[in-house]
Length: 123
Image 1 (cartoon, one colour):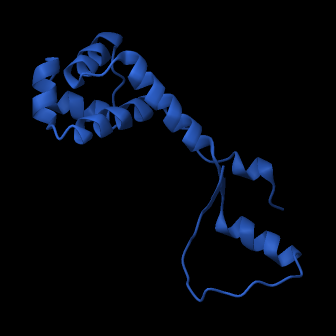
Image 2 (cartoon, one colour):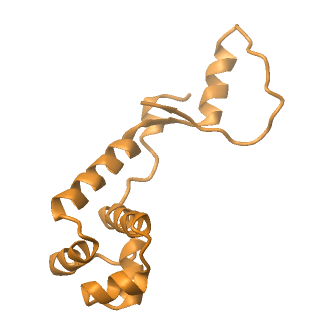
Image 3 (cartoon, rainbow, N blue to C red):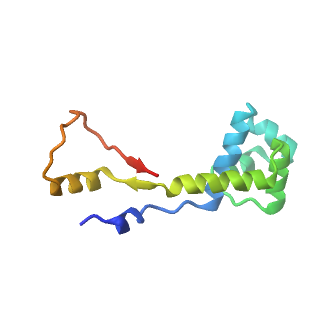
């Protein structure tokens, strides 16, 4: 039986991944390269790449240097991470859950004729 507890089984995001996503997104929005930002932050390009991909946990000193290189306040970085975490918490209903609910509902809806997995997001 499908229920709300099944929806909570999805993996929880890691803070380092969320921070890395915001750093990458900010850098790309600025049209800057990894090499450019790494040079300004005085960190190696491979290390910055690892931070952006969430494979390394940046120390507070490194995060401050990268934020400074991006012209980003630490509070803005954390605010963007918070926003992304709230978005991640939006309810995700899997297609098999929707199908199970439809089997219990006697009203049949017309098929779209398309296959594949579809996710329904509800905020």
